[in-house]
Image (spheres, rainbow, N blue to C red):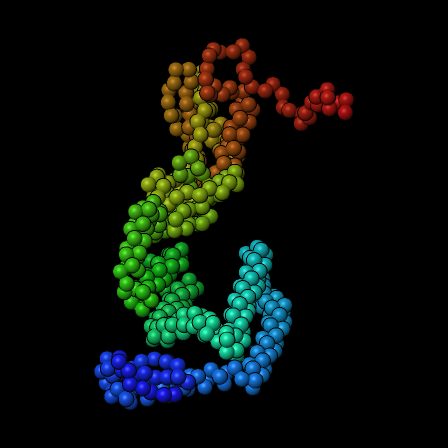
Amino acid sequence: MRIEDGSLGKHILADDRLMTVTTQADSEFEKMELEVLAELQAEAIMQAILIYRADRSDDARINSVVAAFVWTVVFIALVALMRVVRDRLPDRIAASVKKRTTGVGQATNDMVNSTAMAALVRYLMRLVLLIFFLFLTYYYLSFVLLAFAETKPTAQLLITYLTGPIVDVLKGFGAYLPNLIALFVITALTRFIIKGVRLFFVNVEAGTIRLDDFEPTWVWPTFNIIRVILISIAVVISFPYIPGSESRAFQGLAILAGLMVSVGSNSVIANALSGLFVIYRRSTNIGDRIKIGGHIGDVVEIKLMETIIKSIKNELISIPNAQLLNSEVINYSSRIDGRGLLLHTMVGIGYEEPRDKIEAMLVEAANRTKGLLKSPEPFVLINALADYAINYQINGYTTRGSSMPKTMSNLHRNIIDVFNENDVQIMTPSYIADPAIAKIPDAPWNGVLKKSKTNKKR
């Protein structure tokens, strides 16, 4: 290395070849004397040349090959280990998950849940192993290229492209770690409080803790309301610790989501609030037989959004709680004065029949009807004096509101039998003229049905 004075500054030469020129501007920028700066640059160039030659020597070539061979052996060993892990670990973890979730599936009469959960866990495990294999292959190629002088710049670029983002993510995670700890503490505290509230309501349901005027059906709806309030408070407290919560984009997205929920969920909120009114106003309870609109059935479940009833024809009907709150609901199971539900039906009988006789026959039909109470006694009301008949209404009390259709059918059957036994013709629903012969059976049925000719041939 040799340094000569030139027109622009100090010329640095290697074997009489000009390498670079150190100018006065360089000296002022580095805040060094020109001669000292030129000496330092010449020494740096000489070291770079020596390193370049050393990396391409025979010993360096052998070391590069050995390093590449070692990295290859390590890579093959790790790939073999990963293959064993891939063949065994996902299946074992999936089997463990399936075993743990089978009990839940049996409790819900649905075995598909445990199988689907095990398949999902197996897929996620294999996906993680695949990603790890790709990272391993990438770094293996980078380290092999790094072992040779000619490919070292390319390897350094490859390592920088992947390692840089990973390091940034790790640094970000480290910086976010205090916030993560705060979120963990808030979550753990919220779960602890919810468990305490659940334990309190379990004791209320069991009767260990008594609350005046607190219905048993209110226990779990009240617990769910308190749980939602606690979770909402925890979310509000946790919001400042969420990554990116201070950015305008995140805040704008939160506002947009709130507007979408408030605008698009009017009916949902209405049904939810109606569900709370239905639960707490005590007009309808699970097991009650009710009539709403054209539907009659037993209340199976009262949810926050809807009420499920099972009709008398064994149909499952879902009624939105808003409709249940805004409609007239007849509850056949609720007792007002202790006497029970008053069932009634009407028949039209001609004016020529004695009133006392008709009333006695109707009371006899009611007394024969299973499900109608003997006390209070059934009674008859004259509902109307029609053009051709008197409309008699028989009334009887029952405490079996859930059996009302069967009871009414038996009452009608007994009315027909009693009137036929006493040779009295029922003129309901219409009347044209007095027939020559009363429209009543002249003899009891012998219990045998006639068969068609087709059935006889068969």
